[in-house]
Image (cartoon, rainbow, N blue to C red; front, top):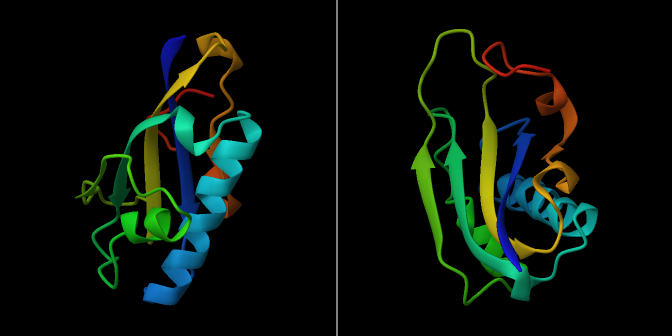
Length: 120
């Protein structure tokens, strides 16, 4: 079994704890479903949030989904001019038999638009 990294991102319409929980839960659910993963496949998850989000820790949504024995950490995204506002990103480390090219990264809503620094 190999260790793989899965990226994901979701934009928020507003900085409210309930809205963040809902959107991050949707993102994590999509990550698990698209790559046919279970909670037992998770090794760790890094969350970043843009500096305009401060109503809640994104990791709280993971705990709400029952991801309780996986190490989680939250960090602030760099405050780069022109970057999309109100975005939570995840980088999940997982055990998977899929090759790197078989991992489906998940970007929901407007976060699906590529950043200028990421090649298509």
